[in-house]
Image 1 (cartoon, one colour):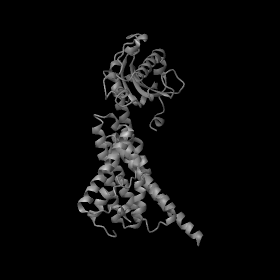
Image 2 (cartoon, each protein chain N blue to C red):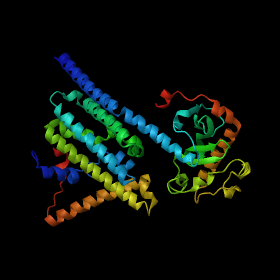
Image 3 (cartoon, rainbow over the protein chains, first blue to last red):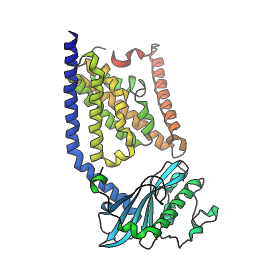
Length: 214
Length: 202
C-alpha cells in the first residue's frame, strides 16, 4: 500500500536525521571548549601587535565595548573598543574601525592608541584591496603600517595626516594611493574621536561576555 | 569492470576518472581555494575524509533507503559530516580554518561527494565504498595540491596566477596535460579507442 511506503520512508528519514543530529551534537560537545579557547587566543594574539611596548594586564579581550552605529568613529558598522589597563590605570585603547573608502570596499583596522593619544600600532584585520598593490597595507607584506607608530594628532598636525603626494607626511604605496588615503583618514578620525571622548571610552561598561563569545 | 582490482581502482580515482580532471566535479572549491599548496592540502584532506565517511555511511544504510528518499538522506549525511569536519578544523587546525573560511562548510555542495554516494556507495558493499571514497578523494586532493602549488609558484612571477582567472588557466593546463599524455600513450599502443567508456564505474 502506498501509505505504508510513505510511512516507512518517513520513519527511515527521521531515524537517519536523529543519528546525524546526534553525531553533530557529539562533535560539538567534544570540540566546544577547544574552539572557544582558540577564538579567545586568536583575538588576544591579533590585539598584541597594536600594543607593542606597553605594560598591561592580560585579558584585554574582556574589556570589550561595542559602540553602536551611528557614531563618530570611521565606518558605518558598529565599532568595537578594547580598553587596556595596568592595574586600575587605563593605559591604552584599541579601536576596531572600518575605513569606508578603500579601493575595494571597507578596510577593517585595529588601531591602538595610548592614553596620551599616540598611536601604538595599527593592524589591518580585513580588506579586499588588490593583491600586490593595495594589500601592502598588511603588516605581513610591508612595513607601511609601521610608519604610524608613535604618531599623534600633534605630530604631524592634522593637516599633515595625508600621503606625501597630497602634501602630507606619510608614505604612499607605489601604484596604490586610494588605499593609503583611506587608511590614513580612518586612523586620523580614530585619534580625533579618542581625544574628544577619552573619559567616556574608559567609563563605558564592558559588553556582556556571554554575548561576546557568540 | 564488475570487479576491478585494487590497482585498477587507484588508477581510476587518480587518473582515468579523476573527479576534478575528468568528471569535472567540485570545480567551485577547486577554483576558489587553490591559491596556495597548503590551502589545497587542507581542503583536499577535508574533502577526502568527508567523501570516505559518507561513502561508508551511505553504503551501510543502502538496504533501508528507498529510491524516493535517497537524495535527502545523502544530503543529510553529507551535511552532518561536513559540520563535524568544520568543528574539528576549528578546534585543532584554527589557522587552516581561517584561511579556508567558507569553503569548508561549502564542501556540502561539492557534487563529487554526492556523485560517489549515488553512483558507487549506494550499489556496493561497505569495504569497496570506503576504498572508492579514499581513492576518489585522494585524486581530488592531489589535484587541489598540484594546482595550489602551481599557482603559488607561478604567482611569484606572474600575479594573475593567484587571481581568479589564474585558477581557470591552471585547471585548463592540467586537463590539457592529462589529455596530451593519454593521447601519446594511445598512439604508442596503436589503440585508437579513447577510454571514455570507463566513466563513472558503470
